[in-house]
Amino acid sequence: MEENKLDEIAVQMISRYSKRYNELGYDVKTLGWGSKEQQDYRFFQTLSELDFEGGKSVIDIGCGFGDYFALLLASNKMISQYIGWDINGDLISEAKKIWSGRDNASFAVNNISTNQKNEDKADIAVMLGVLNLNLNGILDNYEYSFRLIKNAFECVNEVLVVDFLSTQYTAEYPVESFVFYHDPIKMLEFAFTLSSNVVLKHNYAPIPQKEFMLFIYK
Image (cartoon, rainbow, N blue to C red; front, top):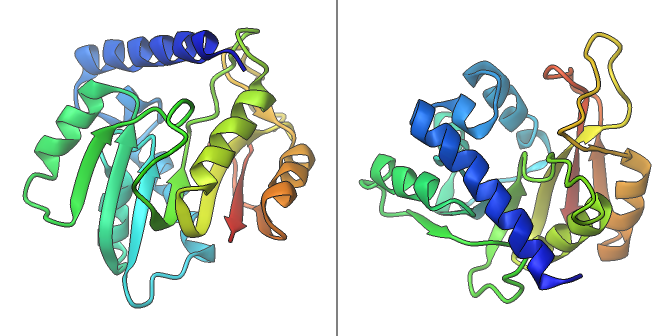
């Protein structure tokens, strides 16, 4: 995979979210979520397969403003450390302001597609909404997704959670060209190349499109 193509994708993503941030500021729509309710519903889906007993460290890849951390705290999950990574410096700067009073929360600009040797590791990593953009031929979306998932999996001690838009479309919502729909079976097969301990969650309501999650355990 050519590094310049990864850089091109990064530039496009940074521009996309900085433009929204400059227009909307601290808002879930800056991050591409339809509403706070949709964002929370998606985040809640991760909790069914995660164990926070005793306090766990979490890396949030594509953290935006750290809203997932807010949900974990509101859900009374025991978090020893929360590390937020995002490709966009504007979002990270805002997150640092929002969470400045939290000693167990830190944020950094990090591109998981190119940074393959991260010093930080955590018990749990989540990567939510990161793989939804259609790359339109710059790179094969599956090749890109495999790379990011593999890099992210190297950063966890226990489990990685990744979500996708599903090729099991909903009839009520039109297919959109700017997003990419992953085949659940293809992604499950890839997950098995990383671990024999995998959960595929494909049974939650569309938001508003059908989605699924993979829980890949060490």
